[in-house]
Length: 83
Image (cartoon, rainbow, N blue to C red; front, side, top):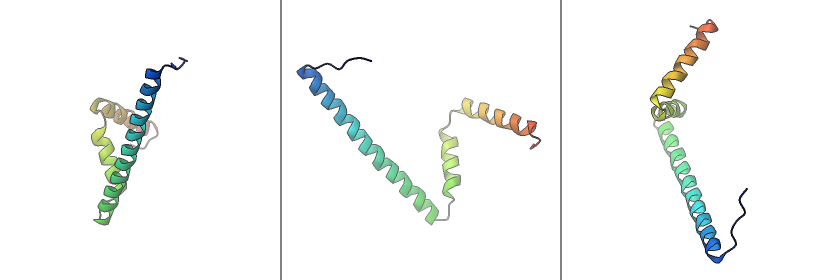
């Protein structure tokens, strides 16, 4: 593991990095809260939040990886006699 520098510039750089990380963590929490509120709003409008999460996950998935995963799932289900 690399030893941290102890010079004045290094201390300032470390403080700046930590401040940026903390700001991003705050933004991440706010974004998570906003997303949670949207799912609650959707539920209030009669949508199924679990189904919405699946759709969002599928929309965001890499197409090739998703196709490969779907093929694996189909193969396993076939092997188990489920298809």
